[in-house]
Length: 360
Image 1 (cartoon, rainbow, N blue to C red):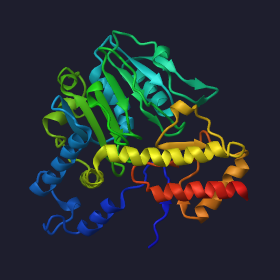
Image 2: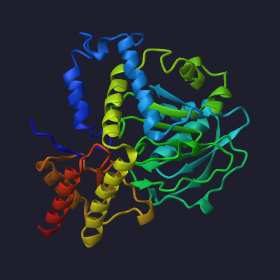
Image 3: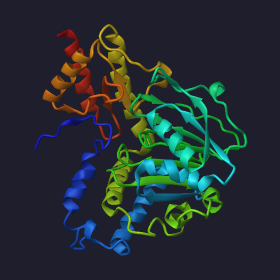
Image 4: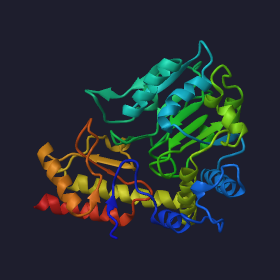
């Protein structure tokens, strides 16, 4: 079987080693005579996998004991509601920095669940071209938290330096770039991420939340929506998405064996630099809609001269086994999602094709 080059934005490429491990263990995990999908989530076999996944998160991100690591369902979209439901008491408001479609949706959901205000809105003519500077943020020192989306998969923008929010907890949706590089978790009150970019398959959401925020979280919402419910039960208060967590374990084990996040960052920066260099050197043919200091290392977006030429580019790329390059329907263009599991060889092949397509 020939594997294609997968540039899909999510669900996205998974490490081959993680998939091969799942293939080997599909019918019999750990000599138990059963698939992980058949095991009770209360049993020792699954419990070992569950705890290993959490331990790998803590190890790779250097998460201190001041934080709970939760494995939840509902995707990052559910966290759009759960964050304000848990963290905002009646009468309190949160600040939202709107840098793309997903932060805009998070802001809209927060306005339903509680009170929220826009501390900055980077939308211009329906597009998002850059990340705001610290001086452009209108922050409320009394806010319950400040929310950002660290990487914008549609617009192709990314925070490379996180904002200073003083004593106000910083909350970040890191669905599309968590674990692309080391970060200082202690700068955040909450980090949440749908797994289907760098962490594993769809179906599991990683939430890293400061324990004091869990403890003082609201109690007048359904128990299943309270972070404390899941923290108290090690994310086993109800049946978790066992196979997705198993795959999370497999993926993080591969990342650890690759040398951890410092090694991953080095590779990711080289991949992104290669594509951006082709865009720059052939600027008469390719163009980036994103300002240079805001360009994403995970989602490289670019345009050709006409939509027709873009469609031809994408079709020809598919013939060469390069999949998932069509830009989001809301913005068009081309998008190469080059998450951790996308090998350097795939990016090199795309760069070579871009140069070749230009010269045709």
